Length: 299
Image (cartoon, rainbow, N blue to C red; front, side, top):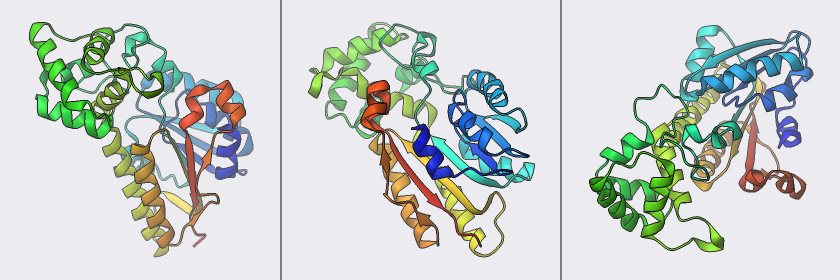
């Protein structure tokens, strides 16, 4: 949603843009030419391989812009910005993972092609998806699949996984997908039965919802600080935008933005923007995207 993101962020010369989930630098490359001269971009991503590609791409889009990179969880980003003395005029968190991650079988995010059961956005995390599947108690696995995958067959799936791992370790995406398929019928609309379980395990491995809640909490506290004139990492008038791809992400963003409105921020109208039919036709992954954005008061 490039045009919609630019409309929400309203980049201007000499401003600072922070991309909490840089990916391959697509959004940042669009922002960069609009903040020359003397603009600054901070690219943050949990995946070092993404950053290695994003940095050069953004610098090529606008050589005059100062481009900084930082590898790590975006929940820690406000502390990093304060330490660097950076105050963001724009912040974007695109919560969808990059196509480069999904399409690479070695990362283990997808069962469309077999690969190791990994799913770590940050490869230095101590627990992979295979580790989680091998060690988690059946009741906890069922809870994760029900809560993070919103799958009504969660208990049946968890039971099958535990039975299968007792016979042989589940270490590949194909093996896990096959176990899940054996536990439940095809989903509505032909959705592969493994889809929701893979989502649930990925969310758990990367603590995606915990990190999201932490970042939203930082943003809300910064709104309170700005109201008292003591903000430290968002500039007055800052624009903050989140791209979400499923209800588990969108609900906390929506609730947080409502709290930000009560703190004096302005919610953009309409409440959220969806991808156009033309974009969905070009990129099927955008069909569930929702863009929510807010502007902080000038003082």
